[in-house]
Length: 235
Image (cartoon, rainbow, N blue to C red):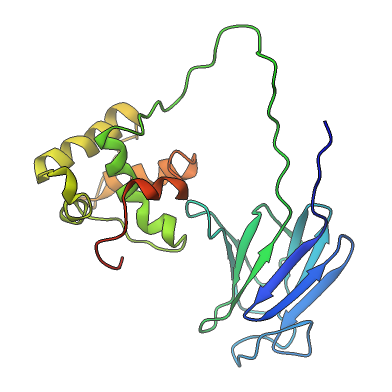
């Protein structure tokens, strides 16, 4: 079976689009640079992107600023690139590079990753799912609602409260006790999150659920359609 792959990456900021082939590189910064970011908080030569086959590397050439590369389509994944870090590999097909200046960012489109999909059945005992979840169950809708802020904005730190989940899933007619029951069921039975020695904040259970679900892609952006349109803007 042959695999057709796009070579190189695309870098986009507003109307400017740069096409970079494998073995090539571009610089970004306040200027002079290939991608000019006209903000006084951005270094003149802020960084460099190198393209290697079907992935890319980013170098932070600033002296004091940490950059964040996040996945706009993912579940909160991001990579921090500290000052002086050279050729950090980025695993996302679509990535947003954020600089610590007001509204300074750009997108990088990398080739689609090659995935292994075996056609022939494997011998031996079938592997059991570590976290068996029923996407048609009410608890799964609550799980998606808990993860929604992070799915829509990977850098969000918002974790919906129980009253907010009740409003978000108003069509289910759930009360506070029902939502708390499903959250506890997710934590103890389905995801088996560990209780911290000193729980501290009351929302530790919801935070642990969201962290585990997004870390293992148990909930992804495609599940947001199960919730319908937001009833109000997320915080």
